[in-house]
Length: 591
Image 1 (cartoon, rainbow, N blue to C red):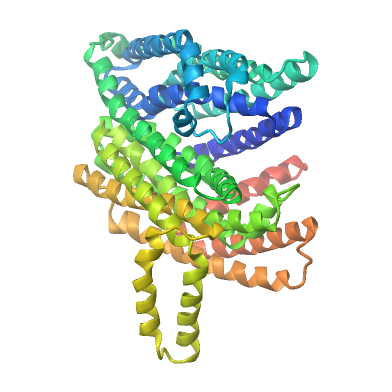
Image 2 (cartoon, rainbow, N blue to C red):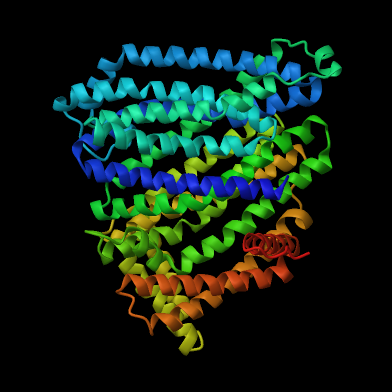
């Protein structure tokens, strides 16, 4: 796995994420928190679900491994033929479902409007009523074009990633956001469309997502084939059937995740409005490193994993898997440390405008801290899932996903109850700390016994504290951490790739390095927190920049001891950046 390729993909995903925030700002600037915009989000839920289950669920699980096998077993001609067949079959299935949804759109619209359960299933936090029928129906039908175009484009993405063309496939979502931003602005601001302008711009963005990849695809289909590619170009139907067989369990897994989301939504409705919003804000923020680092590493690793699996090169497979895990953790752990120590100023900087008050900041930062385990869990799980997909095994990861969903659902119930009694059990824990620190531990055991005695009551009854929202965040973190443990054991049952030397020990070293970073950052944070007026935005920025810089420097220096391979990679990357800066200024490159 090429680390430079990973960093390039990460950079493009970062830009894409920034454009995603800009897109939301454009929507907010043009429509505000309006009912029209609410209807748009509601109307696009079902088209998004069709795409996620049918296409996104199958591409990584089945299409890339099958195409990789075809390329390395039989050559380019066979690869191209298989790609055309699979794409056609999935396109026809997707087209059938979309036409069916288009025809049944009036009935679906009535169901959404008249059924309370529909609002829960679609995770809608706003009411769609009979007066919205015409607009919802139009938006829904326009929105159905988007998954069709994105479905075709996603299969092209899979093909190009098998051919190791990650740059252009990372450009596609970037241009999708650009298409939506400029399309919305032009259609709404200049041509005076209403919220339908956003729906049309989503179709435009999907079309751009497709078109940006077509030239590279066309180039591969026109390339000159070698003799061995032509001789081995015969294609049987078993590869197509195998692709559908592999895709099916992943589709079930995506559906299971949707069920988990629905139940979480039901539980979240029992919280106060402010707590629910805090959870959503923190959830969006914690996905930032997952979507950039975890997705980039997993995306680049999958074709290599599939290639080594096809060649039956166990050592190569093991090395790519462990290198991917170590690189992703090395990059994501310092971000987790920064989010933990600077959670309050970060939340204040990102969301702290308008009616977002100090209580909202506290609840959001509390949730963000408890999402730390989810960041680590999702980052590693993405890579482990790719390993299963490369091995053509999609049923075993479904088992870990189902267990993870169950843990999340149980945790969401019991932990929200537990944290809703925050002001009941926190004084007890403080008393334990005081007695250990100042009374040589005298009387600690009775206090601890009292805590565990009341724990069952706290976990089965609902209190009145807004900190209950932390239960949703912590349950998600626990579910993903358990998932990676189960996935690791099941993966080792197929191939012995997770070992103490190559996996566990380096992870422990990275965590120790991160703990040192956290301690150093906390000291700096407290030192400057007393000297700066943190009610001012400028002071918050200065505090965050200084604390983060010290933490990253400590992490880099600690890497020389705890993560030597990644330390050398980081130093070389810094040298290359400095060399380019010098070269850009007319200076000579440093040898």
